[in-house]
Image (cartoon, rainbow, N blue to C red; front, side, top):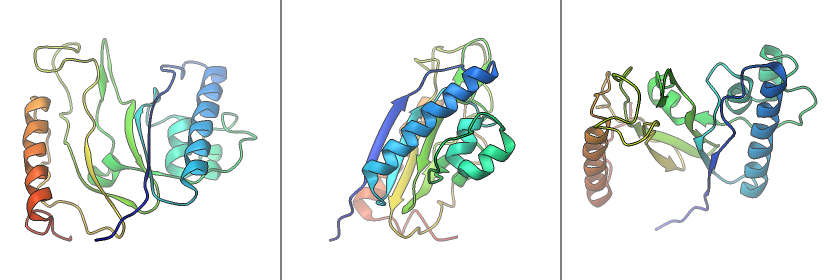
Length: 200
């Protein structure tokens, strides 16, 4: 058997700071500090960063994580000025579906603020497909939080491809879908991945 060192970090960043330029700048600095610290600790080895980041996919901190300083600075002038370079990461959901979920949190409105970020040497195999909408605010009788779970099976090392049976549309019963996915992944863990996951 082989082993691989892996750094895993979770965080809950200050939320809803995208309302004015000063707050957007503060949020970008905070995300830069998180990325810089994680990458310093990982020291070039594979790393995963996940949590409630409090920013939306069109924001400067998202661009900083997904595209790196140079690209992000071009599209978000001022928010990233003077920040040292960090290494870009990749979103597990974007790797699986080419787009972030329509929402990961819903109170009065639905927004996406929760992400699973992958560093070099980490690849997504499968993600829990979320629905495009839910009725009413959360929590409700199916979901116990204002946030819905973002869930991914990740692999460390050379990528072997995405699962071929990921649904095109998410089910409103997120908890039930998650339970079925866990049962599938437990079976994969016991029997090996080749029966369930095939290279594309």
